Figure 1 (cartoon, rainbow, N blue to C red):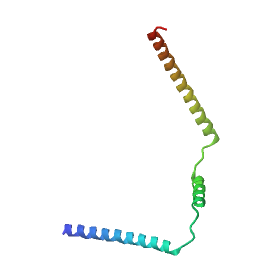
Figure 2 (cartoon, one colour):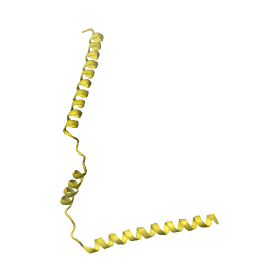
Figure 3 (cartoon, helix red, strand yellow):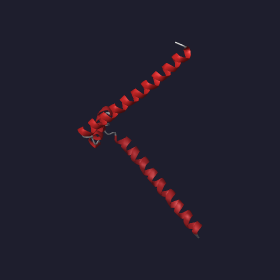
Figure 4 (cartoon, helix red, strand yellow):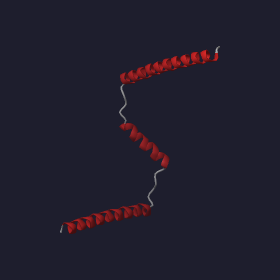
Length: 99
């Protein structure tokens, strides 16, 4: 009896999915047949862009300055480390070549 209930529920789920798919196809056909005025792709792009910019949470001036300081400090530290490694390897190469 449980198998029969499972089969029935599977059939109803399949039937519901098919009905939704048919509705989507009919809606697409209706929108094509209406021949409505299509929006220019470039205009739509900029309208979408404006709506997305409204959703952005911009950081405060203090946070931007702090993040900039952190990035610049990290870059300087990385540059010093790379310079140190380069100098050490240069010294090893000169020592190995006898210059």
